[in-house]
Length: 418
Ligand code: SF4
Image (cartoon, rainbow, N blue to C red; front, side, top):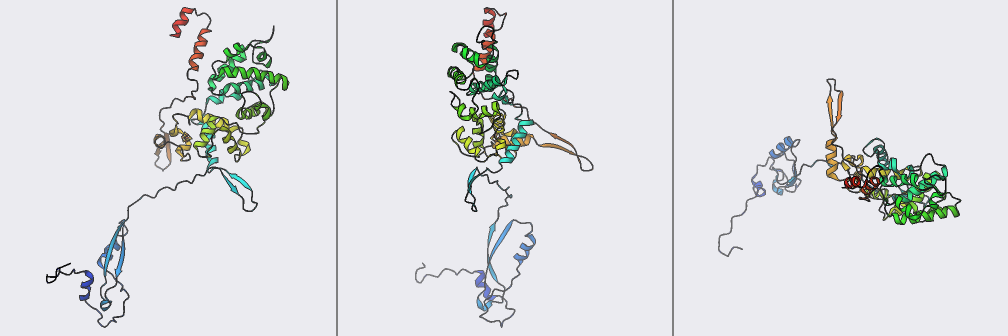
């Protein structure tokens, strides 16, 4: 506040105040006319010319001139709003998990499948057939493939059951070696009986010998016990064959729902549920199809919406994907079609970007505009590893095979061991 008597500060002269002195083209205009006049001013003209190229946008507030000068040149204040030039972002896919829906007409509850599931499923199939997920261990050494084709149908079913019982916590490759030993070395049950994997030979073998034959698989002590008990149950309750129902199979020691469903499909050709391996549980949760705590929950969640004709194949499909591309450790998202096409919400972004670059097509265009050469640049192949559950097992198998190599004396064996 200026002190009394001191000269008052100079008044601020605004453009609004100056407008009073503007030239009046029509001095007779009414004082009540307060409508803002139409204005063409130099800034508008400039902005009109440049509006096509500039990214700045003017927000204009035209202040009406005082009523006495309403028909004069309007004076305006302007505020500038700078628009940042942003690239239009690609619309994000709304991914929905499997969810319950209620039909308002019938009030019936059903489970809607996760979004994009079919596209994802078909892409996985392609990758498994001829892409980076082809030739997985499960394709040649999965439990369904370990029955001897020369054995009788009953013995083949027994082989499938034994292979499944040995397979838990064990690599397919190790399991295949153990199965081969049983099929060739399990002693015959009596004089003149052929060695090999039959119920009779399993009943007759000493547990110690059986344990030796399967020691490469995980938890072989427990599995030896389960196999011996199972053989007795099959003899006493199932007339020497394996049960042909889920209830009968899960009643066997060491057999859970996963094994039971896989066994029923492979041995009896009947599919009553999905066999959910840990890969299936892990991968479908990674995809956000559901949020489940264990394979059994995953089985129920999948069965709620997955069409029945996929129940049998989905396990092998995803186990193979898990063994080759979507590995538990070191996922190869840069080689995975789901990651490259933005369909997997768990894809590792850096790997996907690298993968996309590596796949950039070199396209040569001819004079007539046709593509004459299209070459894909591929990065070096990654060595694919199966899941290593019993890391020391392969080494032990090699050592054991060494011990059985004929013609090697103890000195040479010891040397090779080193
Ligand atoms: S993109 Fe990555 S996380 Fe997703 S399925 Fe493929 S490998 Fe697995």
